[in-house]
Amino acid sequence: MKSKSKLQLIRNAVQLVFLVLLIAGIYTKMRMVLIVFLPAALLFGNFFCGWACPYGTVQEIFGKIGSLFIKKKLKMPRVVQKYLQYVRYILFALVTVGIGEAAFYYINGYMTFMGQFMAGFILDASFVIMISFALIALFFERPFCNYLCTEAAKYGIVSMVRIFSIKRNEDTCISCRKCDRVCPMNIVISDKKHVRNGQCINCLECVSACPVENTLTYGFTGLKLRNK
Ligand code: SF4
Ligand code: SF4
Image (cartoon, rainbow, N blue to C red):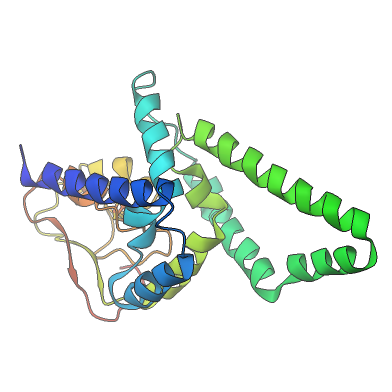
């Protein structure tokens, strides 16, 4: 077994540990997780989504089930992806300024029945969205992470200044584009010197897929604010 594949086995094992901890009721204090993963993202990028998010893991599990029936996952066309990837940041901005919360408390405070109705509706809607996106993940990789997750948006913004990232050795790269094809977040890696993209979840799938030794690696890049 190639050491690169071992990397993915290790990641999957870590993901399963977090999922089991959640099911066991131990991994419920999201603030504790934020205290560790969010500051770490400043330096190392977003490891939370690719390694510790239970719903990310659920989408990957559904994706693996889907692979039994569909050989090639669907990909969003680049031109659509370019714009659609910002939806989660817009949602994050709305949540941050508290428009939704303020509206909810306004309704709740002045119209109790409507408040209760809305609370129930939001809970039901969340459940339906979670189930729907898990099903979409059967044939499309990490759809919720890509377009709707405000948590991922937060990590994405913080990780833009990271000093460790994915690096591509232009001298040894054979432009096979395997890295692009396996990236669950639809990032084009094969024309960059290093990946500095808020969508990156540090899953290291690209590193695992690269057929040329030491061409795609995760390491120190320094503070370079733009993809090159
Ligand atoms: S998979 Fe490796 S060799 Fe192929 S394009 Fe990506 S970096 Fe280059
Ligand atoms: S660029 Fe690589 S590490 Fe980042 S999300 Fe894509 S496959 Fe994962």
